[in-house]
Length: 334
Ligand code: UT7
Image 1: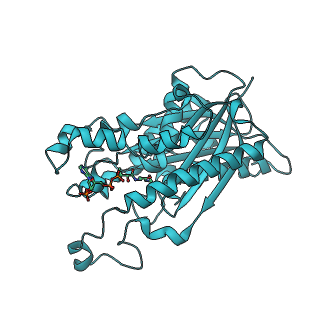
Image 2 (image 1 turned 60 degrees about the vertical axis):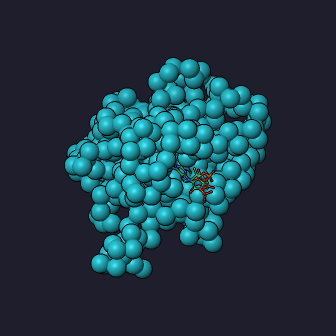
Image 3 (image 1 turned 45 degrees about the vertical axis):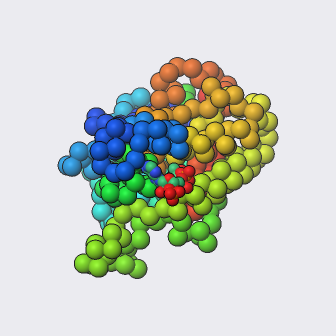
């Protein structure tokens, strides 16, 4: 641990993990009253990944984390803090971050979870940024992992077509080449909490025969209302972070929005001058993987090798809470 200095946080290693099993639109056609046409036209999704029964959020997170650590050239024992962003933790407690700490052998790391739903990766990045900038920690492992299939009702066509499983990880350090974590803008609106939630399983409605019979352990979403807030909030967060950074829209090379729906992505992107081919999309192949969606997209984009040094990336998230956030990453010259 190091103290009393200010450092520039940067992502020096990225990882992602997607389960092998594919759930296609035609699979869903056999499960609920839906069509490939409806799903593609209303969401842009063609398939999503589903973890196997014995594969949990911590397992997927650990796989993504190992890749990120290797890319960063950092040993698990050199990690100071593990932050796990998830709304599908292995347990309510202990944290999934603590399970990851054990799984990775990161014996010197503190560990906690962040619950900001689909905005979890951006919230987690902002926390990592604060710790690294202040000099409190040097190496932070941010993991976002979701086993959404564990809380999706596969009899409810309104939600079951939307979600997929997957994980991403980022090693945020105080030195080395990578993506510098710039300004961040976060927000929340608890007034709208009931739009998107898991109604039971918490202290308000502990698991009981009644909660099971009423199917309260599955995702509930008012899709139409959520959609409107998503576009508005993501646009505002993106504009706010640009202003804070002193960047113009034209200086953004890549836009990586949360992958909830192609229509949300397109509606948001239309409000910016980023050309369509610079708006990164994975929604067609992975669906909505909640907290992990932006990190998985970032991992895929960086692996394409198309991001040049000095380019700015704009990441924008939105999710239950409601929560939202945006951050700027800049590819370092080093
Ligand atoms: O990640 C966190 C944030 N999440 C989001 O931002 C998601 C936001 N919401 C959405 O993406 C969209 O609202 C949905 C994709 C969930 C729904 O699209 P929509 O265009 O808003 O459809 P809708 O809810 O207005 O439903 C239109 C119709 C309804 O039928 P009626 O009542 O008009 O007869 C639905 O029952 O489509 C029906 N429907 C379906 N039909 C075929 C809903 N789901 C399906 C389905 N297949 N899977």
